[in-house]
Amino acid sequence: MTAVRYIVRFVKRVRNRISSYINLLRLNLYGVEHGKHCVIHGKLYINLFPSASLKIGDDFYFSSGWGINALCSNRRGMLYATWDANITIGNNVGMSSTVLWCHKKIVIGNNVKIGGNCILIDTDAHDINYINRRRPATDSGATSPIIIEDDAFIGTNCIILKGVTIGARSIIAAGSIVTKSIPADCIAGGNPAKVIKYL
Image (cartoon, rainbow, N blue to C red):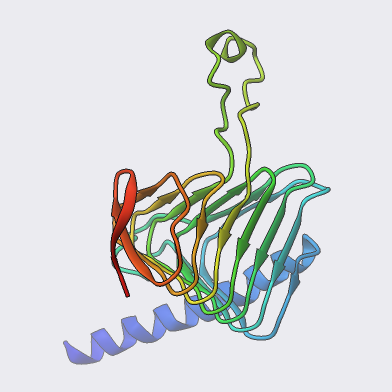
């Protein structure tokens, strides 16, 4: 029985290694600028519009689906950037099955960790005016950049909404919905997220 477990583990490691090469090739085909040790395990959705840009620093790790991260089960992550949108990811950043939905700008600093199944979306996606939502093309909501400063840690299943800055070294508790900026050096959580205590 132990031998079977070792074989299964070996097969999964080989699969992850192959997926990493394929994902790196896909990034290169999209013209993504990335640093050394850019590792993406699993099946990742990538949708970058022709005028969108994505820049990734050194030592990047992204797990997506395949049960690689037990918190994410089989959910796949996504990198989605529309016309003229810009996503910048710093050095030594890790995330699992994260969705980055960018209409304007998302900036992630250095040494940031983003827990499983988080969503960062810098747009309302749909207009708050119901008359405008009646149109066939309703993807016209307000947008505002998201900035995650250095050494921040975002717990699993968080949603970071448009216009939010998360200060350096701050921690966002699991399951939080962040609607307003969070200062540096604190723990915040809840819906909507509020400062719980300063570090």
